[in-house]
Image (cartoon, rainbow, N blue to C red; front, top):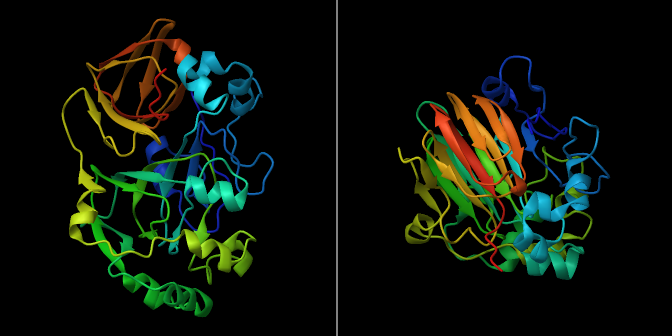
Amino acid sequence: MWLPANQPAQFYAGGGSIEALRGAGKARTDHGPEDWVGSTTTRYGMATDGLTKLDNGQWLRDAVRGHPENWLGKAHAARFGGDPAVLVKLLDAGQRLPVHCHPSDAFAQKHMGSHFGKTEAWIIVGTPADGGNVHIGFQEDLSESTVADWVAEQDTTAMLGALNAVTVKPGDTVFVPAGLPHAIGAGVFIVELQQPTDLSVTLEWKDFLDSEAGGHLGFGYDVVLDCVDRSAWDNDRLKQIVRHAESESPVTDLLGPDAASFFRAQRIRGGASLDASFSILVALEGSGTIRTENGDVAVNKGDTYVFPHAAGPATVDGELVAIRCLPPEVTL
């Protein structure tokens, strides 16, 4: 199923790169920096904001819940029920994002009433010409009191300066484990895979959010700061999560085994053979045809599609280059 842009309002600027990919007039450019593609996840505290609506007026979430094995396959449905267990976004950072992190599954279950935390990964698809900046993980081990003081004082200089500054270019990927503090720099455009929640602990809330409460989601910083990874991330550790994954192969695994229990992503090209799976497709370049057991689908640059597991195996013809986003790896 072809999907139009789905851009819930956000607190930060962006959207131009999403429109440039999708085509003029096909996306918001005013504070629409996130396109939630094939989303069955709502924004934090909202009833429907963030959900994808199908052409027939039904929420994709409700369609999947109604026929989970059709959409997700038997093994996935047995493990996760009617939840795809993945959220895909196009994210266009029109300005630097604040320093923040996300809770783990265990922390979210204990403190936030959520089955999922929010491990995520970034597939870099656009940056300024000389590369884009992202900030990932503290350079040194930090005490609980140090981080708490920075947050209380909203010491942006200290928080940002304590993180590792990393230059990324198109073709790079970054796996971001839960708890890892990070900030995405202005001009970085990504396909982002996440666990299906909108749980963010915003350490740097001043000048970004309306209130301090938005930073700790109403739970209090005394609670949520316990989810922050305060350990040192040296170059050896960073090399495990930041890598270059460019390849001319028909199918390239972009995120590797460490991410597979959370989500998976492939760069696919003409000649690819694809297994049956619920999947969300983001076409980055060219055009081509996805040939499934149920018929052929023409795909052009900027298109986004959701495919049910029941579509079966598929092949890719043409000059298409796309990102195929997949749920966690599950076997019976």
